[in-house]
Amino acid sequence: MIKKQLENPQGDEDFYDFRSQKSKLKVIRVDINLPVYRMENFRTYTDQKEYIAKEKLDADYFLKGQELQSVQQKQHDILKKLSETKKGTVPLIGDVLQKDGQRERLLISSTGVVINGNRRLSAMRELGTEYVDCMVLPADATADEIVDIEANLQAKSETKLDYDWIGDAQLINRLVNMGRSPKDIAERLNRTKADIENSLQALAEADIYLKDWADAPGEYSRVRDDAGQLFKDLPKLIAGKDQALQQGSRVIAWTLFENRDKIQGRVYAFNAAIGKLAADVLERMSEELDVSITPSDEDDDESGFEIDFGGETEVDYAPLIEHLRDDETKDDAIEALVEACQAAIDAQVGKNSTKAALKAITQAHSKLVSVDISTAAPDTYHGMQKQLESIATLVAKLHEKVKDAASKTTGGG
Image 1 (cartoon, one colour):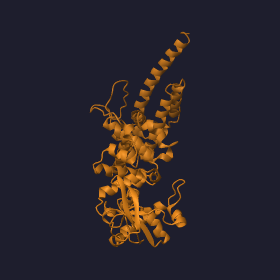
Image 2: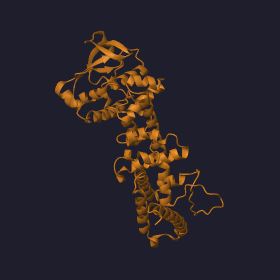
Image 3: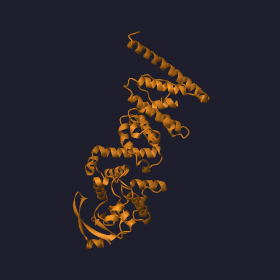
Image 4: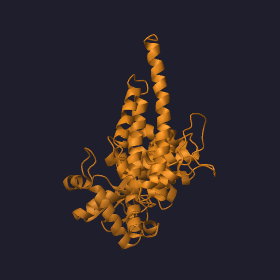
């Protein structure tokens, strides 16, 4: 049908996003039911993956089902939802079509696959439109060239808002798999090379979170809306750390993200706790939970508590991570982590403050006052004794330092 229409087209139209040159594409009018939705569509990528995960379908369900009516119907449902989603001041597609009719032609392949205009087609079908005008690509257009067209259209400001950050990153990933360098992709998308590389790193971090922590590989809807900034910040926040601390930082980030209703402000405000203060946060958390993160020698008392005043010590954050995973301990662990993040940030902010030391001592005093030994389990007594002995040693040292500082201030009087 398309081939027959092309023999007597309605006209032609200039198109500038194919093979990096101006092209004259023939325009035809076809029945609204003739075009098929393109499944390798990065605007709908996240929704497709969510449906696949929810229904436990094969990973290539949409790609292999492009010619199947059932799969086309599901893609229509996804596109309909997107076309009805308000984006700032941009009017809804259906409202524009209902008022003005089709103002922009669809772009289709010679076999009827919609390259650009999938959402418009879904909206027109919902409105009961009978015919649709289309520009037709040459029959020799390749799959990679079609991806290039989508990238070129994505680079234009008026279409950028239609992509969530996952779809954008997947488009970049597809271009990389086509052999394009980050520099080439940056030029095509009118962005910086650093931005392109960060998008790929953020996608990799999201995949790690979904697979290794959330046990939900491919369920990108979990990280689509308000997690983009976190996963884009994460590569920089963990850079330069050893493997153990990198994983510890990731777990801090993941836990804060999943429990963002329990923190004050946005997760972004806790970047310091995820980044440069991560070791401090994890140490504070281990002390609060009485979980050792320092591997002990075989001769050491398992419940012992040791304070190291100098030198680097090998640490193992696995016990803390396990507390955050275990259903029986995770509630207390989450609370301890959130408190440790806030305490580490407060300490950093008040580092140069003349009241910082007093504030830290006051907070420690408040915590000790609130301790209720009567509710403690007998098997924690020994651990508490060790902790209190260590605290007493620290208090004695601090007391001497304060006494010495006070005497210098008053001239020894």
